[in-house]
Figure 1 (cartoon, rainbow, N blue to C red):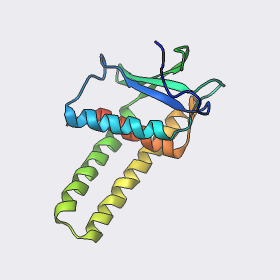
Figure 2 (cartoon, rainbow, N blue to C red):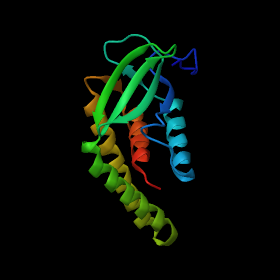
Figure 3 (cartoon, rainbow, N blue to C red):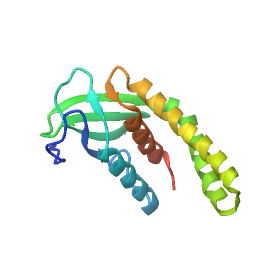
Length: 164
């Protein structure tokens, strides 16, 4: 596997993200669009530094194995760096609540007052932040990421759970 990413950027960042089609599989058009947007946003700005490795930039392949999200990290030339297994169990409640808040938010846009919309949006952002902090905690001894990268990764993890 070679990684044809964006050469010339700083070392501690992701330049390519792929989803394993055998374990994650394609979604419907809406799901694929949301996945693409999440990946695009993540690649635009991120801090991603596997601990104990000074190489990079990095390519990330995400796959599912035994109810775990596998972070298959490689250098741009395809050289393996690490594979980290992240249990999805701690994220299930957060993702479920986050989706409920997103549905409420999109429903409120049509009928609610601006103050009601803002209140729902504050709750939605709070859940998103909680998921981001959990992700930082779960990756703490494996991969250094900043809060903004964690937010974008949590968005991608959430989209991977979306059934459409």
